[in-house]
Image (cartoon, rainbow, N blue to C red; front, top):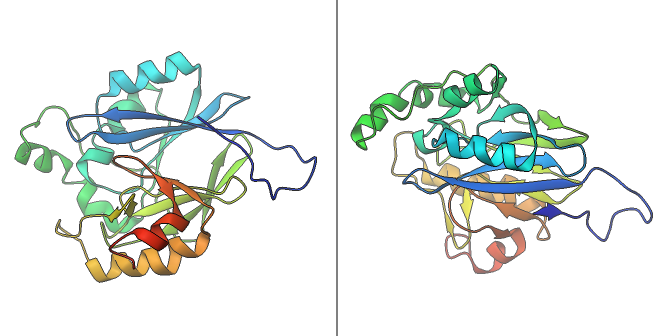
Amino acid sequence: MTIDRPASAEAGAEGPRLAVQIVPVTGFQQNCCLLFDADEKVGVVVDPGGDVPKILAAIEKLGIEIREIWLTHGHLDHAGGAMELKAKLGGIEIVGPHEADAPLLANIENQAKMFGVPDLLKNATPDRWLADGETVGFGGHVFEVLHCPGHAPGHVVFFHRDARFLHAGDVLFAGSIGRTDLPGGDHAALIRSIKEKVLPLGGDVTFLCGHGPGGTLGRERLTNPYLV
């Protein structure tokens, strides 16, 4: 889908058009996400959790040049295919998450054994960590990085202010929030992240998440049982 600029944008102003393609991967049905410019066809892969051939097929079908791999956090279902995808795409950089997730990324293979998929998912080593307040981007699109711990210590989200679009990873879901019963989880920290960093972005912001459908922050503020 293409995310149009909001009606409040300056009249007559034109800018790069952000497009999004979700590729559900693995038995976890994780929303691996292709973010790209609809005109220049350059972009990034967010959270390649596995099924790398499926991701590559989607990239080829769309005709996109992938510049980087972005990770929201270090759980196996979001980062388990990152190293394989990096190799298949010629060694492009893996960017993120926050360094607090280094132990999770180094433990993906052990996690995979626990879930019965020991040969499919690999430990990941980012080329660059991210910190709160940084920006990342491609093709004229700028995303603000917000460190939102709670589901995982180093979880980050990516906010495109001009497009009023948020990639929320596993911080926030439609009608729910991320799990906090996994290693490094902290329910109070997650609620703070959502209420102090995510919801203030604005009720008009559309978000995508790591599993299932997304929504708008305004709707979650009013109806999400964990937030009202």
